[in-house]
Amino acid sequence: MRIAVDAMGGDAAPSVVVEGALLACRYLKGHKVILVGDEGKIKRLFSALGTFPPAIEIVHAPEVIGMHEPPVEAMRRKRSSSIRVAAELVKEGCADALVSAGSTGASVAASCLKFGLLPGVRKAGIAAPMPTRQGGVSVLIDAGANMAPAPADLLQYGIMADTYAKIVLEVQSPRIGLLNVGKEDAKGNSFAKEALALLKSSSLNFCGNVEGTDIFEDTCDIVVCEGFVGNAILKAAEGLAETMLHQILEELRMTLRRRVGAVLCKTAFKAVKSRVDCSEYGGAPLLGVNGITIISHGGANGRAIFNGIRVAARLAEMDLNARIIEEVGAAITQRSE
Image 1: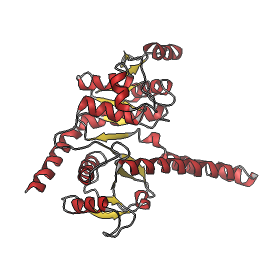
Image 2: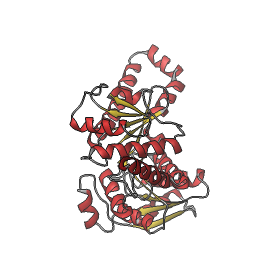
Image 3: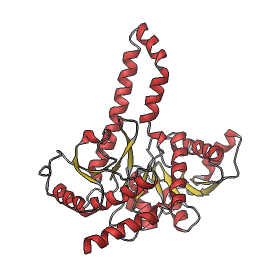
Image 4: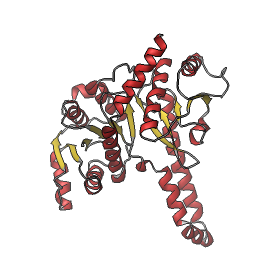
């Protein structure tokens, strides 16, 4: 598989992207990594490291779309931007998947404009893995691709995430919940009630409304919501995890006894950190586009980029989109009958 990576995307790009590409060359045999970005900067990093594996290729793209730029406008104006050129490589068949830790809006815009949507799909959705108390993950969709969906879009999010969970997470019959302010059917606004009715009438394993706390429990495998809400939840969860970790570390440093206890519990702390560390997941797939896109966290480190490349290659190999087309088509047929 050939994975195009936006080398200029992310808070610490391109150094962490180069680090992730080198990890991919070491552990993912048979794959090729195409780094798209400022060729001079990327080559200087490899030169400083004294290595340049044959499985890595550089494609020059000198422009970068910043986090605060309007994504669609910037995509059209910056024709040599790293995310646009990387998406074009996938569109032209020169790469099999795209990975970016840059602007989420730019990644979504590039994927939608260059790949187009899958047949029958109304809107793309970001499927973000969320750690649960039981040690597994739940899938939150949409985590920020579409800020103004229709209730029918939430039904399709459920269908696409259901297919993703079956193939990638190997969940036989994923349980799907609709995020709401309460579990009763009467709760929520008209949008939520209409989405609830659509999900109830589908063939999905729908378990009804769920609340925010259920995302981190074993209540369901997939939580469906609108992108504005999903993105706010994702960032709030990240912020809370960082705050709690900081406070725990501060308390452990307070006394000698606590410091000794921390040393004794070091392996346990590492295990917990790995379970909630977003770098372990690599990123979130953008479901619904006619291509494979993995959107990594802006603060991604080298390991996160490596895992993003790994997940992108796996999704491309498993032909996820063919299954999504099949399931969405079946749902459309069911509703029209």
